[in-house]
Length: 307
Image (cartoon, rainbow, N blue to C red):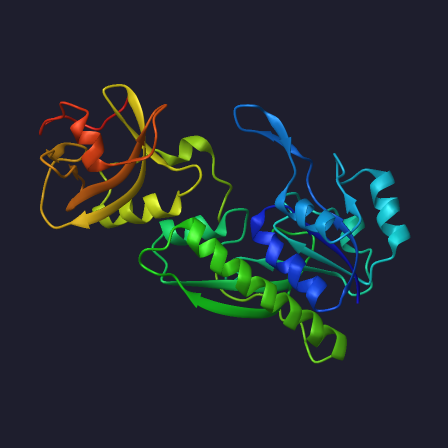
């Protein structure tokens, strides 16, 4: 099937790779612009672009997806189908209606739950036990299109947004190929979404602030869902500290108060306690709580609080 692939981050790479391996004609790959990263601010290509170039595919990086020249170039390619996996921008109606078989989106949730840009972290933050992948026919709404196929997976108790994304990316690649196969042989009937929708808005850097008044289990889920970006954080004596790994500990304490600093770093919450396992002080390397305590005169009674 003559296909154009839209995708940008690592999550989309397995789907593009699966399309190529399945023998689909990938006529072009559309991805976002290269971005400057690191201390050197060198331009870095999106992961999807790297794979596309390695496989000798045509790469398109429009600055604005609504550009008439870009849409005209897509029309000239004449795709039978467009596959969209975490492209990162809203696809305009002029593109959605271009291919004969429509635009198929791989979305990392069981729609209509967690429509939006960040379904993986929000599923963890909200304590879900299951999530999955949905392939759908895209329409003008926000993840409101008819469902094609779904595949459910468990959220492990130690999953972070990073580990869960990797498993979902592989599931999404497999489901995309299955979806296209069934579309080609006519055995797949799109089904309208049913149930109460929920939303997963984009995360911003400031969203990682820990609320120590929350229950310890909620903070545990929050830290996992915020990793690796934007990463959960708090303040100690005006110093911003990223919190990357924690566990729940039985007991009681005062929210945000250091309850134990003798070999362990245990903080009070709204219910039960949090033991910090791994953290990163501002401008420093990632370290264990034990290493952090060895370099500080931190005592019980100090507070993790606002700057």
